[in-house]
Length: 267
Ligand code: SF4
Ligand code: SF4
Image (cartoon, rainbow, N blue to C red; front, top):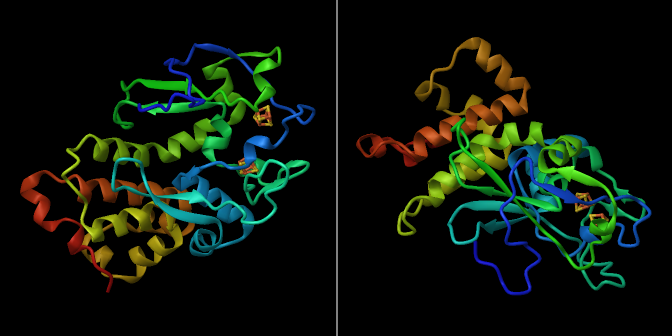
């Protein structure tokens, strides 16, 4: 990982049993400082949980609360949480739209990276490889006083406390697609249509549902009635279905590649 000299990322690889001291609570002097001036990449499950919480469609959520970005050193489209333009306040940093003086107003559905903080995750192996190793690193920002608190955790305990497992399970196939794409030579670019399909199935789940049920998708991808019933009602099941479909079209063996994403058109 490239790391600028003043980066808060600690160059130490942590495993599930690695220990660290940290505690965050309302009485720390820095309370909510970490919710400003940040770059939060939203995962598919983050968008599903947040749009539901806010009573929005995925399309509305994306329009109001996100900004498109390409993942560093790749052409993978991702979305980041759009910070507020105004109210930079004393710190001079733009705040997250969900931060208030009393804390996070979407706390139960906060994004995955807010749950992990002050940990970050390193993706080294394909996520659908059950033997694949998972590693973490520490993000130690100067303003964060949580490291001075006397509370010890293992990485495993922290993940459990922060409820990241459900999100990680739902995001596993998406993370797997990213690791697979990153492992390809940089000269192998996705076609624009492939990027659009990746974006829709990953982030715009309501639009993807329309695509499945209202285009010729099901003629090309026959699906049993019971599964279809589930996909109509359950965003997380639809996400899983969409990510499997993406893997099939984006990472086909070369012989089958002629039927790849360009063939999946609306209508
Ligand atoms: S800066 Fe650190 S201790 Fe302060 S509120 Fe954020 S996570 Fe908690
Ligand atoms: S979503 Fe919540 S926890 Fe995450 S940055 Fe915004 S206010 Fe902070």
